[in-house]
Length: 381
Image (cartoon, rainbow, N blue to C red; front, side):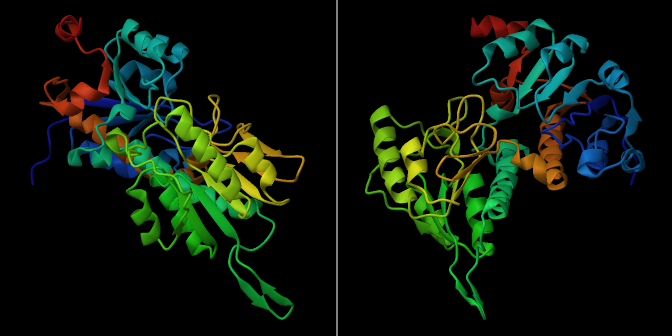
C-alpha cells in the first residue's frame, strides 16, 4: 500500500500539567492515528509525563518532541485539555486553530479575545451530540464517564466503613447506602461503579428517560413524588428547572437524603450555574460520618449548597468533597479518551490537505465560534 503524501497540517499540544491537571491532549497512539489523516504532531517535552507517557513514547509514534515556543510557532492547530489563558493566546500566531472546551456558553469575552487575536476557535462544548458522526468527538461524554467512575472511588475512600455487606466472625457489616443525584453520563458511571463495589445504590434525575437507565444498572430510582415530565432538555442534557420546581425538588431530596451514607451529585446544565440539589438543611440531616462528593463544584457553586472546591467537614461531621477535577485523577484513561475526541475534531476539519471550515456543514457551523471568515460575519450581522 502506497504511503500517504507528506503531512501538510501541523498539530501541536502543550504541557498543561498543574496542581489539579494531569491529563494531556495527545497520546502516542493518537499520533499514529493522525498521521493517517495527513497530520504531523508536535508536543512539548514532558507534556505526557503526568499521564505516564514519556517523550520517547511520542518519538516512537512519529511525533516531534520540541519546546513550547516551537509548538506555538509551528503549529497550524493547538489542542487543549483546558482552554488557553489570554496570555497564551497573545503568543499564538494569527490563523492558528484553538481546539478545546472554550467556555463559549458563558464567556463571550473570551471568544471575542480569540477573534481579536486572529485565531480560529473550535469550541468542543458546542458539539451537536445528537449527530451519530460526532460521537467519537464528544469530550463531555468521555470525561464525564471517567468523572463518574472516580467519584464513586473517592467516596468509598472517604467513607469510614465497607461499601459491600461483609459477614465476619465478629458480626455482619451492612452495605453502604449510596444516593446519586443526576443520572447522566457521570451519574450512570457512578451507579455502575458503586454497585460493583457492593453498595446499595439509589439514584434520581429529572429526566423521565433516566428511570429505565437507572434500573437497568440494578439501582433503585428515588421516588420524590414529583412530576417533572418535561425534564429532558436539548442535546440530551437535563433542562433547567423553574424556581418553583427547584424548590420542590430540593425539599424532597433533603428529606430523602437523610437515609443515605454517601451522596454523589453530578447534575450540570452547560453554560449555567449548577442546580442546588442538596441544601444546607439536607446536609445537616445526614448522619455523622456521611460523605458527599459534589462533581459540579466550581466557582459558580455546586449541587450542594455551600460546597466549594476541596474537602470540608461540617460541624455535624459530614465530609463534603467538591471535586471538579476527578477525571484528572484517572489521567491515563482520561487522556486516552480526550485525545481521541480532540483528534477526531481536528481530522474533521482537514480537507484537501489543509484546515478548512464549511459553514453549511452542521458540525462546523455549531463548533466554530471565532474566525468564521468575513462572509460569515456579514451574514450573522
